[in-house]
Length: 187
Image (cartoon, one colour):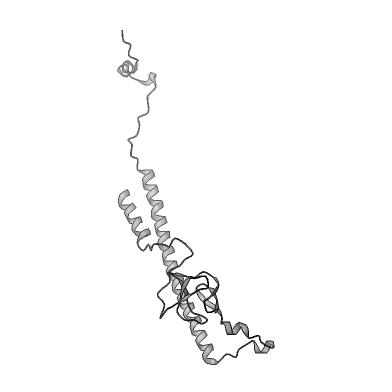
């Protein structure tokens, strides 16, 4: 394999599944959500939420919304982490203050527990798939690095210039070579 062929093989390995990255490296494109609804924040920004409840996905345009607290026009406050709603407070929830600590914890039904476990299992499955994908990309990158090192060695070992003949010492030259090596004097 010559240098050009080796270089082309490396390009295929490295750029085979390149996906254009967004301008913001932290902004990750997400798959389309089921039945998204657009909401306007108090500051006028429009966001998309697939379901207005804990676990709902929040998108700002084509990217996952940044972590933080958002307030909708109707006064509903949501807290987002990793693009998912982790806390939801409606204006009526804010007006009600619990009387004691026992009333702060809402009872959880078995159906809610099962749903929460299913969501967690789905998240774990999605993360495992992502880890497998990253491991695959890492293996491809390691192979590309190996091929790059081989290419560098090939380039280093293959000279583009013919070797330069070492000049002989004057004493080691023949009489004809000594005559040719003398400086030419013009009269």
